[in-house]
Length: 288
Image 1: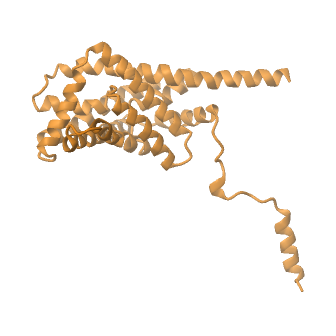
Image 2 (image 1 turned 180 degrees about the vertical axis):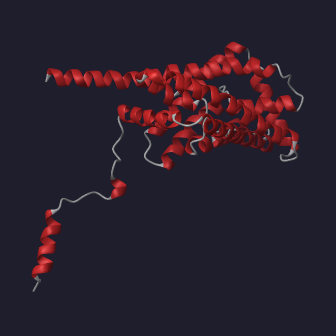
Image 3 (image 1 turned 45 degrees about the vertical axis):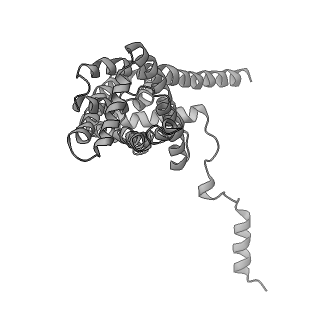
């Protein structure tokens, strides 16, 4: 015979609605507005950071991007000209992006998404965003240069790997400015798109897969990225295979292209669909 206490406890338990396990909550596909709100939250957090914090994070981000250049160069050196080598070697290109984006280090091309998306809604954050860009971009370049110094001026890497790094840099600066700019537009578009999709991911594994797939395309197409490619070009300069003037001639159109791609093709378009969708919803509610 069941005791009254057990019967009461069983009735109480049965009267409570069943709740899904914690790990199954919030797994619904996020809307564009959800992703935008997450990106705006990330932007507010970054804009609150001090210049010193941004500078250190940006320096680390630039140095970490050397992993993309180094991983690709090592694979190129080991594989040589075998069939399919270009595809295989570019599989290592996403390494730096994964470390930087998942590790939340400052990367200039990622910062063309979050703060600008916030500025479009909150104009008062414009100058704060300019401050962030003014600190992060040179810090990224300094970090990339530090990586290049270690790679080119110390015996840390096998000489064949350094040669491959230098050759990648020479290949990058061989293109005219117009080509670098439009290549940078596509590169900036893909990186900002990766940041947008990571904001809608539910897991680290999902984020890594999104970053890897999209940045693999950047490497496969040899699209200009103002920081990752800087690591390779600096090695070319430090090993005496390229003049110093080659860097600013490549860097300026690459940065402008990355900004246009990140801001124009992702931030404005994605922000536009969020605001337009919100206005449509509000209008439907009024009509109802």
